[in-house]
Image 1 (tube, one colour):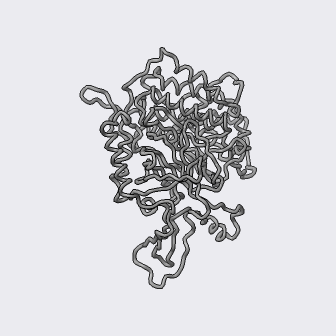
Image 2 (spheres, rainbow, N blue to C red; image 1 turned 90 degrees about the vertical axis):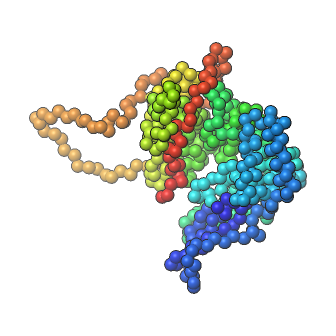
Image 3 (tube, rainbow, N blue to C red; image 1 turned 180 degrees about the horizontal axis):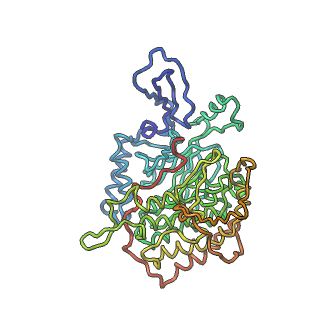
Length: 527
């Protein structure tokens, strides 16, 4: 909790054992330093130094906190029209009501255009914190912050990155006005534990690890999660908004997002439009040829392309990002709309989702784990996407929706029909040779032939055979492959939903049918 509550405060845990151990929780966990303690404590102790914490953050002034409270009162009264759905009030209330555990801090950032100009923001409880064990301490944190100078709510993201994002780097966020960018100078917070890892490895780590600096990005756009969409029309429009932002980044700046997911698409609480967030994993066009170098993919597992999951060393390509929109739309349909795996009941004569049956044991949970969460550790690399790969080749998401002619279901169908021929025409052997793991051959085996007159007719019956997808249907040879896929190939799909004769349902969204059932990201499992 210390590293979550206090802003970037170094913390060291003294763990009693024989021998005792010191563990640094401020960055990537390093192998603990072992030593013989003369009088080891009976309980684990955690030590931190307030003098070493973030120099750009300090306790907020009482007068500024009063102004934050006044903004809440305004939005709750005469300014309610500016916050129709109440999300800004909810975010402010989170800051105010959680001061005991998350003290309100004043954070100072430099202006993106005038580096000498500095602005003050109030932050409290983070809206989200990366909780994968390898990101403790220096984890990415996102806040809804109060802009003291402009008397408004803004969004702040802080993370530790290499000098590639140092002063002068201007991230390209289509559709988002970049208000401020703070890239800490070397005299500010800098993590060098990677250097320690190299030293204790005895030279096993060949590449010199890079120091990481604390960065902050502040934007004037405040979002709510994509899952809060009101109806199918709002969902599809928001997906299209994000798709167009992706098109603009790629077409005008040559930048690939790299992690299009449910959580990276948000809905602007002021305008209701969708926008594409989380660009910290983006790459320039000329950087894309470099394949995976870590034991696991960086990005969101369940919306990652089948090709990236199946071929663990494949470099990210445009088609991988575009395919993520397919999986986002499908997951929204599975989670929030009625289909053949929905758990239904009747309450007061109305058929609805049976929330008591939701959980790990549902058919939908099993489907999710098989298609979207499946993974295996092969030769030190995480692989997955087997069912996702076959589902795309079959042009079938593996679910039957109650209303297949509704817009969202039509969108999913059209997406799969676009990708089906691309995966059927994929040169799997070439991909496996270039990007897959190397199969180690066991060597020649002894073989015998059946005698010509033995007369045995063999038939194999197995319950497992029915679970193996059959050969995909024959499809016409496409004029392009996955590697040639572009945004323009989606134009006919998005254009279809711009027709005036489309009928949009307004009351078919259900509760989240995967609540309490979503599997853990395989890269965060204990190994």
